[in-house]
Length: 235
Image 1 (cartoon, one colour):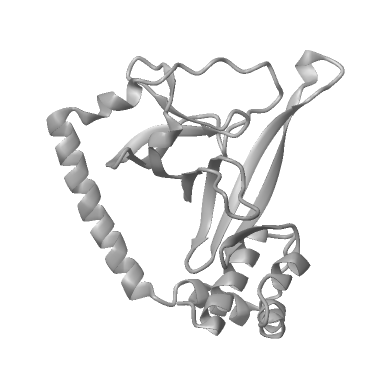
Image 2: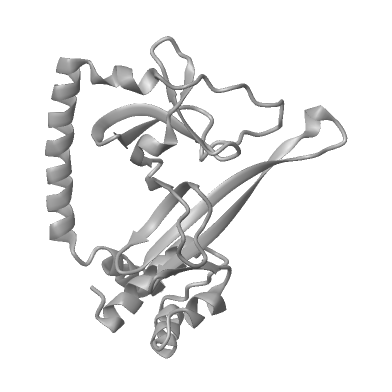
């Protein structure tokens, strides 16, 4: 089992030297962006949005990971902001920034190129005319190669016997983009049916690593699709 875990880590970190170079390059870019923004006061454009309305009283919150603002890296209308305090509202599909006067300002989604928060890379996806296209909104980009894997998180209030007992219920959906179409992936079978003709090889890989879709769909999808791209020569 320990050997399989090590091999799985190597699977993700096979290009470790390239990854390290990318981190170093990213740090250089972030430092340059910070110096520029400090000079021109460029953060102010982020606070032009509408203030977020309050939420109903519930026993939990509708935000990704945490109701508190978290450090994030944002590309907004082509400008990189390496250090901001943001949170993603899954019930209203809103990315919110805390203004200097502590107002909760909703960013204009069409200006969001990407945001990196809580270890996730998030994009604002616009529904297109391709078959099976997901609806417009914020999505976690799990994989971006010849194929794409998108994760959609939502939160909805569940009615209870009293207002004090209302709570948010969370849901995840996964989408695979492949060969000009999007496919909603609900389970292992659905994924493998869309990764022909390498079902046999992928089943062997999944069995070797003892992966279960229901345990961790995100890891399952990334491992299977990455291997499919290698087998099909897409990389």
